[in-house]
Length: 505
Figure 1 (cartoon, rainbow, N blue to C red):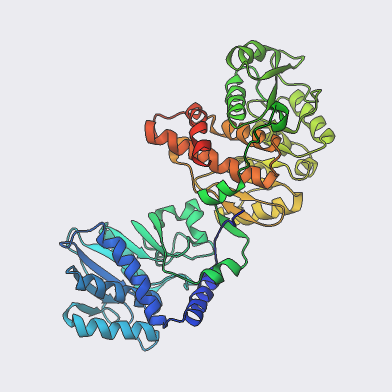
Figure 2 (figure 1 turned 90 degrees about the horizontal axis):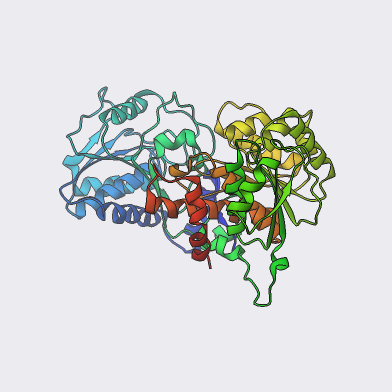
């Protein structure tokens, strides 16, 4: 099995650079040249030679990257102007080398802005290259550089940020009141940064791209981290083959507890998703009114009928089940809450808990402590807030989520643009599939069905979360390609699950 793709801190990235310089070996200025070439190759594939570029450079190695990019673009017949925002003796050695190379090539296109009170103006169509500050930034930008960033943002031109948008912190929360470049595209060296996965930063990052600059693979493989992002190759490595001499019992017996009067759609979406995700047997516990609906739409599933016509009042379903999922469309009636409490108290293994199940747990005294260890929780941000309390921003919520998983020994799947999965061991995994078309009622019910199915088939809770979230997003992406973001429905995610599974075989 492969290892997942790693997310490194700014300090770890600095060490990766140093290890590459030492062990390859390669001079630091030549590694900078390699990174600049990667950027220029990306740029020249997308912009014609009649494009004008304005490159803004700060004092450190990010500024050195900008100078090297400016020179390489100039040699490919692009019009390039360099704006040095510091002009100080504190520039790094590699910055100074690249500044000398630029001045030897195009001195008339160099402007030192350090002593100027006004930011430059730009012709329409100019592309800005932001190489002011990179991953090393640790505090808000102030003074003339902050004013320059505000002027760049106000110009409303295309902005390409090199490695990080200047002003955005790599590993923590950035106050939106501070000066931050609003990039159209961020060209990140070797790795995506932790900051890329939070919604509060989306307006600054634009469409981020990761460029391979050949950092030491040995270092990257050996360097420990607890932060990862999901890739197709890693998810493929988790998949198990289905033996030829299999039968329905080989792939588990799942129980879904779902639905209430007026909310049977949630139960049906979860049911079909569970069936489409490979489970051998499925029993669905529904209120009496849901029986004819379930049996007529999903004959592959067995029905367990609650004594109440409209609500779920008993969740202790007879049978030997290898996994249980509960929550889609069950409502928050006090009788349903009591039934869920009994289920939590009698459960002998992990559960998949979603939607109203989580809301009901939030209403119980010390509800999270009642959840069986290794259970999978799939809240959206508001549901998680009810469980764990309010936080000031999404970075604080991320820290709270990690602590919640560790404290209660559960897996939390916090749904969003880059769904974040946290584990009892302190790990976090960010999903890389999915699209805004999935922001529709019922999408979470589909995910519950997928997760319950995978857990029933014998995958560990961690394997279940990683595969389920990735496949759910991938099916959404496949649906979006055919239907578009606006018109696709949660049911379309289910319909594209087969294609998603096929793509990982």
